[in-house]
Image 1 (cartoon, rainbow, N blue to C red):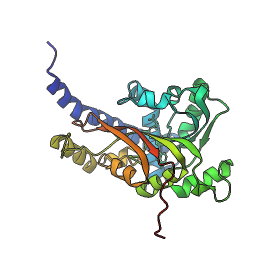
Image 2 (image 1 turned 60 degrees about the horizontal axis):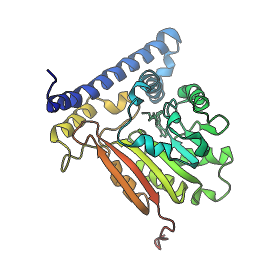
Image 3 (image 1 turned 60 degrees about the vertical axis):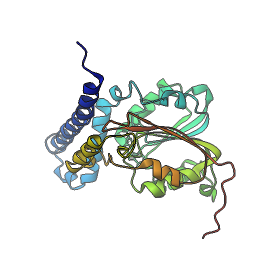
Length: 284
Ligand SMILES: C[S@@+](CC[C@H](N)C(=O)[O-])C[C@H]1O[C@@H](n2cnc3c(N)ncnc32)[C@H](O)[C@@H]1O
């Protein structure tokens, strides 16, 4: 007899984060083990941030593909419609590159700080028929890292950081872990051409005040207290990313829907269009 939908929903709400969290702890322990006993370089442990990012990269390399078989909401069609010059923020190992339509793409710049993922990223770009048009940058999306990397790649000339250069910017499962989210989104907004589109698929704080659930919101707080951001490469479960996006700049379209709003890992999915002529602020 099939379980009632309510029961499966409850089980999923608890099991999904629990399994991911256990797997993240396992990869962290294995990373430390590898550094100490295989590489015999215990001094590397002093750079805890690097250890954490390396363990997250290993977690993602092992699970990223399985976690991408079915993406939330209508993300696949949003990616399929991407065209022109695209900035892919945190593409990971590139498991989603095959969802773009290569015929519509002029070039994709993939901003991926985890160097360990770059070999797989390049391979997946070739598999997705994007070879020669995919450029992986080893940097973060935050402006002090991204802007110099774009200059170095030759894409940004002098003074161009203030003008839009990308037709599309894709943020898929990445904004939960980007530092200084407000400033980073403002900078990404600036890099978008007027009329350009931002594609968003991000897990967010549970909207418990309206369509969400208190228990799911409590679980988010509990996993955070147990060290979720530490073991998952800085990923935050409780970010109100929608508000940061709304405040990043002037949008002519702002279409986001909640997917699984009653879950402990609810998503917002959709597209935002930058105003063709954003109002120039008089404030300095
Ligand atoms: C959960 S994975 C998602 C990968 C891919 N977007 C996907 O959905 O398949 C998050 C990725 O963001 C990257 N990342 C972490 N911090 C970042 C930052 N500051 N800027 C850009 N990417 C970052 C991680 O290295 C990781 O590859």
